[in-house]
Length: 229
Image 1 (cartoon, rainbow, N blue to C red):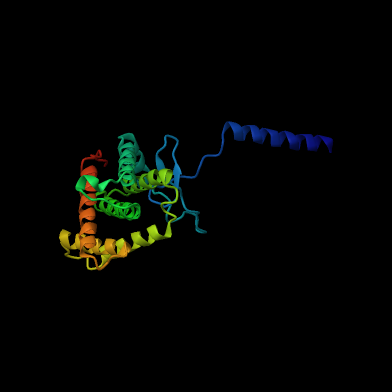
Image 2 (tube, rainbow, N blue to C red):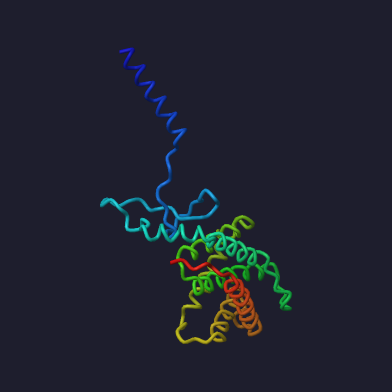
């Protein structure tokens, strides 16, 4: 009996040593999923969903997705996407429309930042087609903002304003000209400020939208990603 106990203890000790030498690796990662983890070099990639009873989850990364991810990593696209996300996030945080002769109160500035986030994400979805780069840029924006303003996304008023902008843009969006879109966004801006009947406020919101859209598109189109096959 003593011999069996000693053997059992030795087995446990050996297992512990092996775990320290060869720690378990994380499961395979897919940049197409919503849960985000940190790669060893700082690149953010997505974690897999739990497997289904049938074995492989439908959301598990395919060999093609894994190959594409590492191609982006090898040619530097992931680093460019991360830097772009940081710059876009910092632009939201440091928003100062005074250069456009627009003076905002603290409350209005808070509203403007949420509008800027919405405009930024909308521009990214329209310009960046690759799902890996798209998700990386968006997650880096969120990280950059959360680091400086931890309560930014937990503010119900902020969240509600973002939802209203989204609904505003999707309503009657087909065949809408840019001035028409800006006008609708301006009306939403005025509504969020409690001044929906104020035409001056509507025009202010439209002007903010055009300014933010221009800044975002300039950054997006000035960032060149290497083509990957």
